[in-house]
Length: 64
Image (cartoon, rainbow, N blue to C red):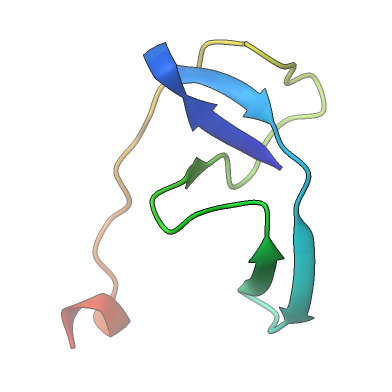
């Protein structure tokens, strides 16, 4: 799973996935609650590549 680390660089990290809920998936290990992941990475994304972070928009669920 590509994770954003220092200076907006990508670090490829192994993760263990749990249940797949369709739009979301459970991550059992490999990330902490503060990890910023690349949610839809292109096939060309490589380790240590610089990325631009975009803050997610608020969803109806997060407002409740």
